[in-house]
Amino acid sequence: MKLADLVQSADWKAEKHVPVIEAPDKVKAGEKVSVEICVGKEIAHPNTTEHHIRWIKLYFKPDNAKFPYEVANFEFAAHGESTEGANKGPVYTEPVGKAVIKLSSAGTLVAEAYCNIHGLWEGSKAISVE
Image (tube, rainbow, N blue to C red; front, side, top):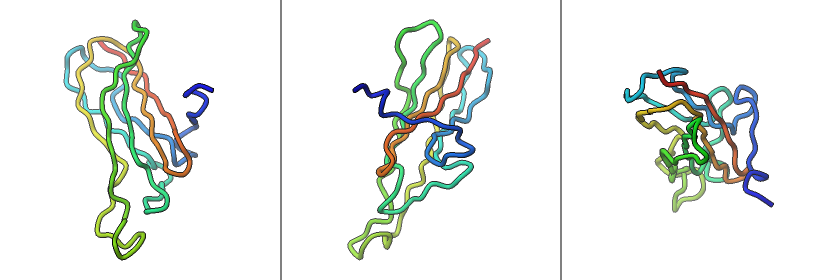
């Protein structure tokens, strides 16, 4: 079995687990670009002690390269846990992350998210560089 066999993907408009990447379609080389990644954009994902997104990782795979580069790693550690019981805690971390990047070549942004119940999910977005 390979890791790729464990990763699921779907249209984020119909599936709440798919990480959504918001970034421009085209950027200028060397220009700062904001990239936001979230899970549950169209259909809210639960954020409870029992069912939550644990982390999101962002990668960039240049069109002219063999391997991707890890860009960011977002961990979400608070899901309502408390000594008083599940979902009675004072804080919940929402599964949203933002990275500011500079690109020198076109490629694909790839995000992976981990749901503690439903496993690994993937989303991607092509980005061109002028």
